[in-house]
Amino acid sequence: MISAHAFEGELNNLSPDVPWTHHFEVSGVPTISEKVNEKFFKKAKGLKELGEICVQLANNFSAGNTISGKRVLDIACGEGGHSVQFAQAGASEVIGIEGRSLYVERANMIARALELDNMSVQLGDVRAMKPDAIGQFDITVCFGILHHLGQEDFEGFIQSLGDLTTDMLLLYTHVSSDKVAEDFKLKGPVKTESGYKGHLFREHKDGATEEEKIAQVRASLDNTFSFWANNESLIKALKNVGFSHVLKVYEPHMFGSIENKNFRQIIIARKIAS
Image 1 (cartoon, helix red, strand yellow):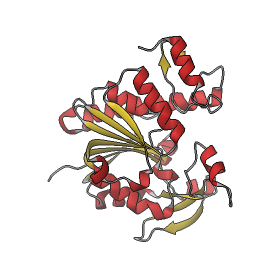
Image 2 (cartoon, helix red, strand yellow):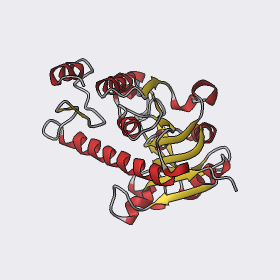
Image 3 (cartoon, one colour):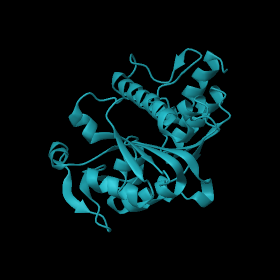
């Protein structure tokens, strides 16, 4: 494994002024620490917990009840935190797709540092994923990206989840309701072209430049508003692209209250032959 000194050098070469989204510790050196940045450290630890939960769910609910030997897609993978967890859990291959080049560089550096030959991350627009280019996957991991996509992208993105996934989708997303719309000052309600209902969340200020949008690393790549589907529409959309079973996870979960679990949803969607 890479030495602590060498890993510190790698970190210093990858925009150290931009806080890491994922928490790793390599040779005793963390990518982000509570002492340096308490806010983003807590977020990173929460993402790690989400990954641990979903590895457990994949092992319990995917075909054969195992990740071992499975091909896994990690959509909008950031710095590869969840990709690492699935790679270490025994997946035969984990491919991450990420739209920010800094995150791609960081993720592939982490894969090298941890000597994970079964993991790689590619730069790409998650709204343009096609099986012809990247193949199909036993398990698709889609954490925290759906609610950052625009209203016009919702249907195509959900269709791509159906096209790319042969067995199991693990989805973590925000779901809108009248109360959520009030709490987060969402616009709407609105409908997609096919009638899926939801609300709009502001990602960027009007007239924001491309550079300003890229700099907002925890917001959308380019759309000013994102679409948060309501619960009924999300379930219907997943069913319409081939997921016959759609399950909402209440436990295990990162958030304690039922209200939070109904807003910040973990969903298992599977293709099970009748």
